[in-house]
Image 1: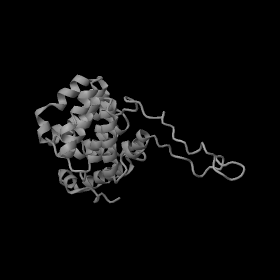
Image 2: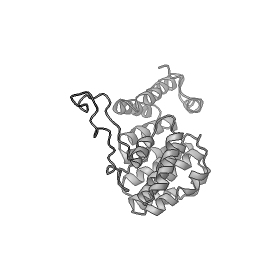
Image 3: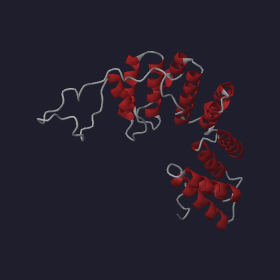
Image 4: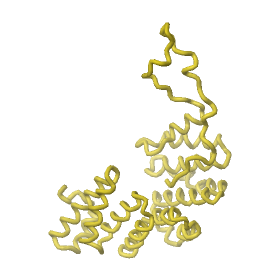
Length: 252
């Protein structure tokens, strides 16, 4: 890693440092990105070093916040995201800040932050992420109809080609299922599966569950009878295994 892999915006931020320090911090930031999904503890060490060397560079504080968020250290993540917002003037981390407040059990504070005037400045994909978090908060509070209603407008306006579309369709389907509308849930799980080219969600599996489809282990020999015929019960669909309306909700 040379450090030259960071994008232009980060390079501009690093210009406030000496050349040698800027190169070192850039290398640590690249390593954070490389390790975040596979070795978050190692990513944490690189992020902390970057912050020690460049504490007033927003990209360094954001990197540390993202690692803390991934590790479930919500208070630390929130503190770093607030610092990024103060240093940069950018509101792009608002969805994550709201989610941190939610994770800390401060639902009222989370909703207040989600309704702040700065939300109007967010890019469309950031607004989608924020709406998904707010929908989750509504479900936490038992407001299942409001959880779905809050996503109504966005799901009908967003292009399925947007990066955030699969997650939005999935969240809406999940909310409709929780609200007792399996027909609408099936429609939107199907849309999520169609849009999810990167396999970010398990929409296809959720769709199969709603349809009562059970995936078989085709490699097993135990389902065959002594004369080589497949056991006639092996391919049966277990229609009682549908996911419950409120089950398996998590922060998205």
